[in-house]
Amino acid sequence: MKEKIEAILNEINAFTTESKEELDQFRIKYLSKKGIIPSLFGEFKTVTPEMRKEMGQALNSLKNSAQDKFNAIQEQLENKEDVTETDVDLTLPVDFSELGSRHPLSIVRNKIIEIFARIGYTVSEGPEIEDDFHNFTALNFPEEHPARDMQDTFFIEKNPDLALRTHTSSVQVRVMENSKPPIRTISPGRVFRNEAISARAHCIFHQVEGLYIDKDVSFADLKQTLLYFAQELFGKETKIRLRPSYFPFTEPSAEMDISCNICGGKGCNICKYTGWVEILGCGMVDPNVLENCGIDSKEYTGFAFGMGIERITMLKYQIDDIRLFFENDQRFLKQFESAL
Ligand code: DAH
Image (cartoon, rainbow, N blue to C red):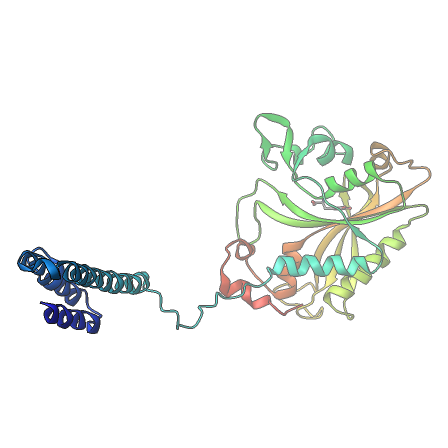
């Protein structure tokens, strides 16, 4: 029996496998009820009393060896299985997600901020949900002004005094209320109007408002500031032209055209063969507005201007449909990465 045990022990020690089936056969062969080791325990009854102790120990250690072997290989196979089950091939190269690009509206907004920062303008912001006072009343809009109409303005149903701001001019009111002249600031931001969406118009768009208040600010300062801006953004050869216009919050008011940046003023379909394209509204801040915002209109004067970022971006890059800005189509957005 002793030799038998030794022979089996050698077999067990030498056993190795990578397959579950073979391991199972090992278990059946040595450890199952009808396996070799339990049957040896059966034979144990026939062992002489002098040999019992030795044989008993040998048998127990054989059984432990078989069980340990079985456990060790089973664990190895399970670990291996864990890895293959996740189906992850750790040797594969990393799947780099593509780097995004800056939105063309952000590129142009940043450029506008940078141009005005060079002549001392700070950036200020205001809320997109605005009250009637800051969006209309302080800016001298008469009670019956059509811009207050339901058709242009998104009102907040629960509180008709609140609306989505229709322009960033509301920010100039807030700046004037909260600071003392000299004031030199631009306010970029999102605005909302109840307009049908088309290639030319959208219900959400972006504006930049400009405001300069100090002693003795004149219309000549406004004109020179806007000429500097137009030439920085569209090129040194750009010319400007101011046409009289009307806004409730400026007096006098004007609209500014630049010489068409596509045809250089010769005439093309972008400028409708006039050589000029409109880019902003401007004027001297109406004394009423200064007073509404707590600034002494006898001591201070100032100018303001406002422009649409979409419009300027469309002119700069010859984009012919405003809806493209809001569709998040990578093929469109990617074209502006290093454009400015
Ligand atoms: N708020 C005007 C608009 O949304 C734009 C504008 C015109 C702003 C003239 C101004 C300005 O500051 O002086 O159409």
